[in-house]
Image (cartoon, rainbow, N blue to C red; front, side, top):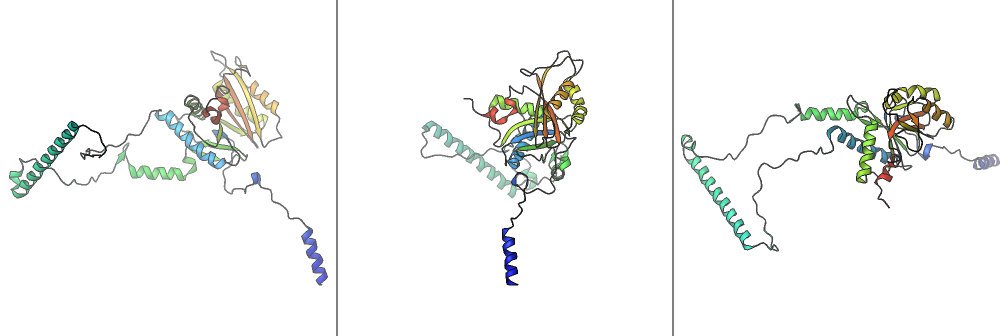
Length: 335
């Protein structure tokens, strides 16, 4: 018996444990919201392993540039100023002010003290005499009655606005920008719930890139490229040809007075089953005349990104001039 147990133990030692291989060497998140067809948003590349930080940065950036487009670039919240200025005079021992300034400050202080003395005497007279005699004296009110009215913004009580904001934050469908799991390392997708009259993903991204190119202001640590996505569908030639028809008619109308030069950019991640050239040719053929292909100097670039089984399509302007929409390159100091 002892020999048999020993032999079994030796056999178990010789066996190797099976390793569990997880995507990107990380555990799979349960309950995550995957990228799916029929959404609009932003395709964002970042440093590998920094997807969570890049997601937070991207949502903050998109909120900022969305507000600039809607409310204007110079929209700044008004600061509340105190109703009564402070009359305190602060003197420093090391100050080199002239004697005339000191005398004027002393005179102003004496005048304030005199005014306060007159007010206190008037108050004492009001307390000692009858109410009928005090009507002619100008007495200051020492206590103010509390205001019972609720503070209102745009005709709505502030507490109702706070409740609505909290409810909106708790519901993903009501948030303006939410993240979806792309399933690819170094890729972040931010979905945009577009409302009527709001600027689209293309307008927001182009405003962001032009602002970055003009100011050269550092905006993020982890984000690389930010590309607008206006069409998402399954990654097949037939599905892509059907899904991009409204997009092509919007940016490349048949009855255009000035023909547009365009190029097609194709990139694929975590998908080796789809061929590159058939997709590029089908997208290029869907653009009607008089628009023509120009790979060197295009007016517009049709960007086709494939992430696993999902295809994402968007149209941008000045793609090469704006450093291929790379925020890090646009905001880096020039050599």
